[in-house]
Image (cartoon, one colour):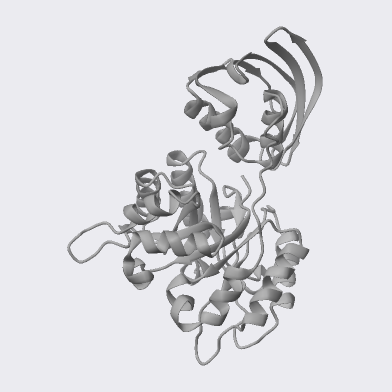
Length: 367
């Protein structure tokens, strides 16, 4: 899955539009955000819960989603209880049915021995969230943070959201380009959705001009999306920066041709690395059969493709190599080249009714 467009991070819900869920959603829509990222946990505890124990996240998630905007959760992790932190991440992500989960790991993970801790956390996290898109949000330049366990985190992540904060300077193009180049030089590479500053600190703050240059640079480097931290600060204290982000044109384009046949739609979604379109491509009661398991219903089919795109054939290039049609049946062969492996023997059959897939037999092996 690849994010598109502009996103904003929320730290404390009560500090954003007075905590009014409907207003938050309306402002997000008017600002043109494609996604909003809400803090859902801190260490092993839920976050954005008020003093009475009332959960503030759920109504905001529902309101934002009603505007057609994706909702992700972010979580500051310390690594002192990696299993506990992974478990709260799993619970909160499932509770709110979030579109993605972001790990905010910083200075605590630079201590000695944190590679093993990061692996413990990521293994437990992926047991509970095998197909949810996961991103790492940490330091901008890996060369400055050599003890940070980059590989342990990124090998089980789908995206990288470095905090490209040009503190005490006004050089966003240099900072972002350097971040991009440094991450390209380490293994594993993950698509970058940079997080820019929308806050001030120690007398410094980004300017509206900085913000536009940052977004222009992200586009120039081929990035599909960018985020900013935070809604809480910029909405009231950096209004010029907020307004620059809101007016910046970064439209979200659908990778799926609406008038295409189901097979074309399937491969358009696969090559765009998105899996929500499968809810529309497949009939509500569609059946997908693999040698290992049968999936009933388009939501289950969506989950199958989510697993394929996030954990098996990440960033793969999918190609139909042959196609035979007979009535409402399509048989086709296919291949995929991915950094996690290759498929050379894909062989599938689709049953079509009223323009939707009602039956799909899917076979492939990954080498």
